[in-house]
Length: 209
Image (cartoon, rainbow, N blue to C red; front, side):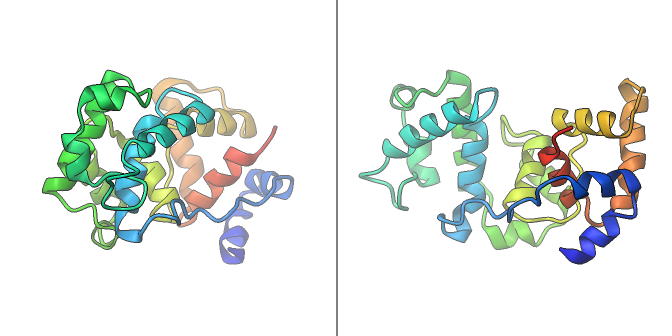
């Protein structure tokens, strides 16, 4: 951590931001889930959380897990086979939309025919993981980048499509560009942060201008 901070502080804007911002907490997500299933469960949770508040997503995901509490092969969540066989009607009772049910079934189908084993996916580089997982319906680049940062603990992820990251960087660096020129400028600013862009982004998320 200290080596990463020393590197990031070479950017004077980021150095000032780090100085006034509480340090991010450890990024490991789903420590309560067996390692080999963490990506699978994280993908399901990411789909549930799309376009709704964290509080609503937590409630729906809790109800979703409860649907399988008596029969789940793993504690508290369904195996891919169980999820693929769950009916739309049953899943709707957890508060899931028809579209999200379609996406969750897509995760289950992917897991039945491809490996979501933590060690296997961890063996791939970042771009290979993005290419591997984005064929799943409802899973885009941003979703995989969040998995890279918070589940796989990859140190050099820059989710330029994240609206909050864009807004914070525009504010911190007094940017006036829009559209493609803005994206190029954001990449230019973040390039010197390598290989610690994940930590820089976590500070940007926590920073309160």
